[in-house]
Image 1 (cartoon, rainbow, N blue to C red):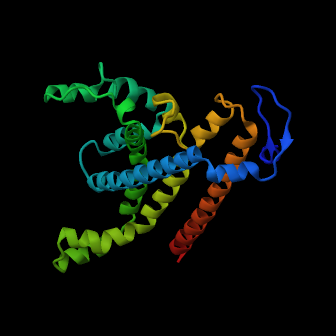
Image 2: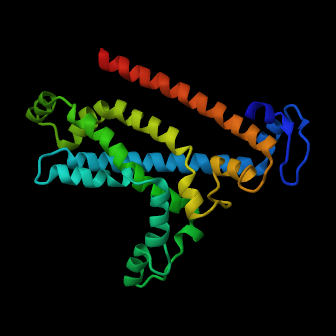
Image 3: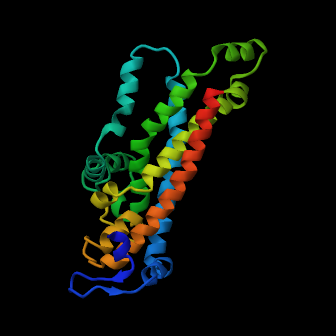
Amino acid sequence: MSLYYSFTKWTVTPPTPRTWTGIGNYTDAFTNIFFRRAAVTSIVMTVTAVVLSVLLGTLIALLLDRKFFGQGFVRTLILTPFLIMPVVAGLVWKNQMFSAAFGVLNWVLNQVGIESIEFATKYPRWAIVGVLVWQWTPFMMLIILAGLQGQSSSVLEAAKVDGASPRATFFQITLPHLRPYIELGVLLGSIYLIQVFDHIFVMTGGGPQSTNIPLFVYQRSIGGGWRFGSASAFSIVVVVATIILATFGLRVLSGLLEGEEA
């Protein structure tokens, strides 16, 4: 039905009859400046959040890849943000972390003489990215930690005996070993984060710097636009793009599995 609607011009409010427009809605999808802005926002948010999550996740995984008292408790505690519902995470950060009146971050800024900042209003895109990084860093950490624990201890001991420094060991042995795990984390993170809706909806409600494609389609349809013809076309475009990304991801994942079997 969505595919059929995408070839029609149909507005519910005010009610209008469905008229056949052919590829007109698809043409609009590639010429609509607001859709292009939403696409850019989606790409920037996704790339930034995934890269930062992988970097921080790798750093934390390296710190946790050793024996210490309370190891299991610390790992469980670090995983907690990833287990929180997106809507709850967005509300907590908006009201308890970013709030200019009583937010934790602004309290810290005030202690060093800096005036309060309404992060979600002044820097909406980066505020949302910050929450996404906070939630997805534990996921990346879990994948990287699994890779570290699967590393051959004999190879590391041989490198140490040969006089390799910790830095050389990491960049020449550990990092190449972690490459498949990092690629898997980037792949899964990209597929999920390109669909982010909850955080944006509860934190900013959309805007020039925070409206991504899912929120744009929502606003175009049941969010008040009621233009189901064009909204369906935009959705189909996103689905096709997601299929392309998923196909690429499956090829990468297939290669990783074949490598593990070898």
